Length: 103
Image (tube, rainbow, N blue to C red; front, side, top):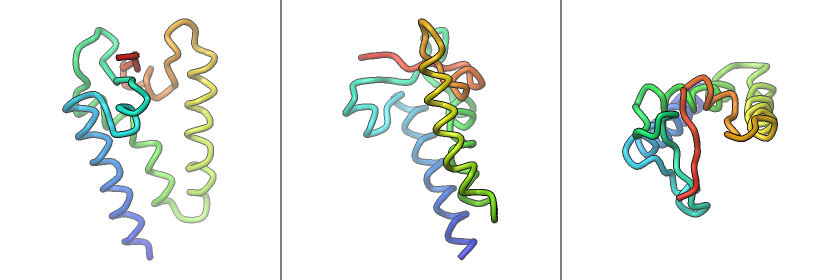
C-alpha cells in the first residue's frame, strides 16, 4: 500500500540521516572504510545528510513514475561521481556540500 511506501521511505531516510550525521558512516560505509564529511572536513550536519539522501528515497513514494526516479537518481549520482575529478563528488554531494573520504 501507499502508506507502507511512505513509512519505508521515512525509515530509510532516517537511517541514513542519523548515521551520517552522528558518525559519518552507515554500515555499508564502515565495511568499505569510507566516511561522509562536509566539504570543509567537519562532521556532516542533519541538513546535509537530508540533502544527500532525500532524492534517493523520494522515488518510492511517487506513484507511476517513482520507479524511474528510483533507478535514475543512483545512476546519476554514480556517473557524476565518476566524472568529477579529483574529488569524486556525486551531484548529491555537491548539492549538500559534502564529500566521501577513505578512513
